[in-house]
Length: 287
Image 1 (cartoon, one colour):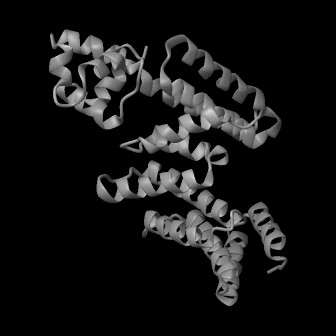
Image 2: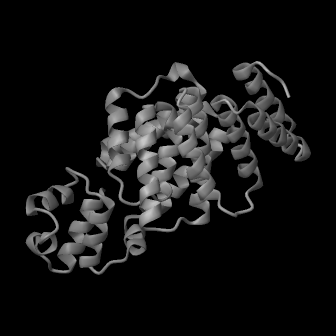
Image 3: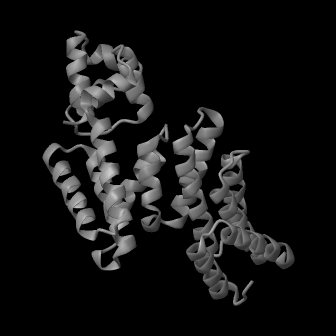
């Protein structure tokens, strides 16, 4: 069942008409379509409907059982991805597609696109998401009013299949919303930091050095004074790449040398080797 189904049941239990619930918020016909799961609404509209129904968001999520099923999905996804289990990932992909066909809940469709993107990242023979899927993903992320765990996970896991310009637009929207309206929980902040670090690398790969500067600043702000040693060192490594690419080679080399030494100190031999190989490939130098 879609969210609209539960809103309809709650509305009727409160003995409210479509006109009363939708007044000064949306048209009667639009609310009716939402209740029939024929369209989606933004998070802010959902919150306002719940407010009018005198139902808290957490209570609503428990009613729909969506929250628990989503967390279970992420748990299965992380396990399959960490074990490089393509078969398990394909199973989850097909499962989400079947659920979407069965109940027409849009988030199952978005989940399947995310799965497809993850599988493609491991096995290019599986096929990249198509134009329609990319547009659905972009439309959803650009229309989000609140970036919670679900939205940030969808964004981070789909970077490889989104247009670069779209990635930057979404990141800019996230920054605006964080700056203007809400504080991030620590776990969401860490997820977003990792996404931002990946976007810095993507910007470099795309030759967008000025964009690197913007995302580096945003990431530094996200980290703040938190003792996130791995993330801070990765950020300094990327700052070194930025400075070196920008023409400040001495400063860049100094940052890169320091970050590699930190990896060595932390015993991250594989990370050190991979980062040195990357520098050799991109700049043809060794530290």
